Length: 147
Image 1 (cartoon, rainbow, N blue to C red):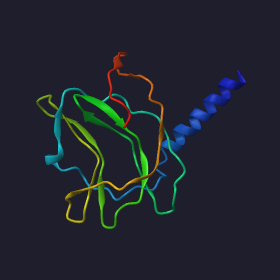
Image 2: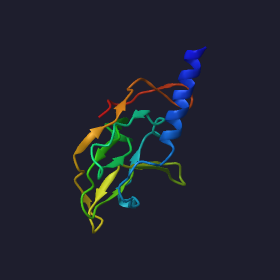
Image 3: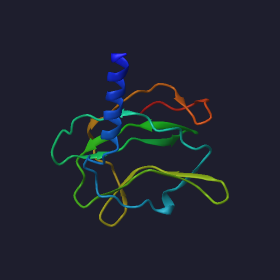
């Protein structure tokens, strides 16, 4: 019984910390419509990540995201990076069009003019449990490798 109570307390603490919004993030910019690509299926539920300690006081956290690769979703773990000067980050998005078609755009770094640019190198990466992903309907989702 104590183990369950301790585990429940730990999970609650992790949940509260993950929803706190206390991590430093890059300056955000909206995705541009031209970045959207049509996909065949909605993304699975997000993966749970253990966020490592920030490697520097100026590092920013980039959340993990699903990426559409070779006809299926693959998880790209969250990471600490040093934001390039003047750059913004457009987080990944998934949208369903009015006609029912599915679209996504990967997280993208943009320079001061809004043009896509190379992502900065990860200073530290989240630990991800790469267990099977169960979708909303209870079926196991076929996903690509964690990248």
